[in-house]
Length: 315
Image (cartoon, rainbow, N blue to C red; front, side):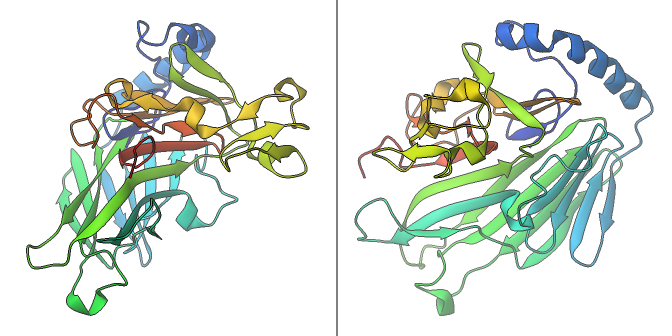
């Protein structure tokens, strides 16, 4: 993942760079002024940027390239902190660390019916350094399976990876799932990576050139401010913090996109000017084909990268 004003490829990028004008014309006009300022700041940082540093502590691993610093719990592999552009943490500091930046999955035994299963924010039990040079750091957090865990844990060896490059305002993440032939079969209806951003900073969301706006706060969905509708995802905003949202229906599925269009989405903070973007150059790893819809970003503020989902699918 990468952190900047643009995100690249299961890469989360955060910086002051202005999004590609042809794809984000409305957004570009809105952030033109601060994009120019932050781009100049970024160029100065890049010229003097040191190599990537890796700091291994008792319970955390820190990757730092002089532009961005990412803190990951060890051996769990949960992203607990992202420091950038003077903000000590872009992730929601009011939440528990395990709820800030994480991979999760839903699984069920073969023969199970419906779309439910066991939700698992899977944590590593072992940590190792894969690559450590001045140009690149890659770290791994793994959890292995054996027959004694049958029925309790998804039968997969799981390996979460995080990568940071020199002079890059962000980071990459990917996961490797291994299932041996003799292991039991199972259903896997959901796999995703989730980032929960600071609600006091990120208020403007962009999913596409024609789908971008200031968003309600998570408090607006609570019972004293919102009225639940037919589905748990849909809430009528009756007394929102910001009156401009009164009468709207908030539903995360309003912001879904087809896989073929799911290339960049995320959130913007206006003070200071920082964008948090999830960028995916290819959807070949996603199930369901090019017109299968998946969730993107929604009120929280949440930013998702979904690779496997039963949303919009008869299961």
